[in-house]
Length: 397
Ligand code: SF4
Image 1 (cartoon, rainbow, N blue to C red):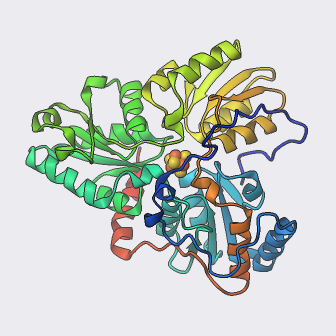
Image 2 (image 1 turned 90 degrees about the horizontal axis):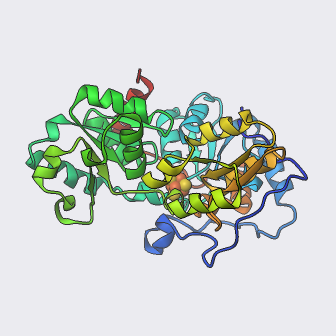
């Protein structure tokens, strides 16, 4: 079931001002040499084609129950209108697993999400990502080689035995598999506190990756740790920029990764919106920087943000610090509340935005014609250990 209401007509939402970089250049998109298969074999329909909506609807109808379309909350409205379900990455992967009759899972999201769906679905199901260039800059900030080097350093410092890895859902299948191999768990932004509580029962230290902000915010806000208990491992510095002494003293070893979208919000954004909209409640995602989270009134995952706005009083005022497509959709769905974007400038996730209507039409029409494009497959060994870490998350108390 979708949890985000469809946009209401006639709603007003003040768009943030355009910036010189209206779409941020993120992740694989910033490095064209590393983009995986940005060409679509066959014809990618022109964005100006007036029949795109009808073509998507016709292809979807032809495929019937064989196809199941997942739409992440940060996707464009033009794509979300065709989603069978919407949600965050973990909810979508579970929704896909609950539909074994669907041969094709079309994942309108980014690469790591499609990998998770492949891990959780049956062998018979194929997961399709309409544009292979839809990556995630945060997930790309932790590679398997870098994390293996980090672990070697923990071994050299004599602390590896007391470290439990906790990997955010927003990570590659390789990183999830590393976590499973070393007895750790996956977490989402909704259950990060429970994951850390569990991890600190298993060991004395946590290696949290790849999002330093979610790790720090959860440790300090929810677990009562201090900022001094946290160190940041920088994979681009020798030994992560940390001494063995610092590793031995730390409780939280945070990987130096972040979301390029949520990382844009600043203390100035919060101060500015409080002046601009008197009486506003500032609600931000825990991927935001620590000082932003500290200055906000409320903090929570995308699902939390959606529920908070559903429950909000008519006439209440809200400034939301998360991806713009979702904020715009929520503002349009709640015309009786004043909902503004936390920052004055445009802040889409550009890699999420790679999935547009032409790519969705191309993927659906290819499937309807008997071709299966852009299949995301995780190898069995990686899948086995990644699933171990995902199952550990499901078993969290
Ligand atoms: S919003 Fe951030 S974490 Fe989510 S896919 Fe985009 S870059 Fe990755």
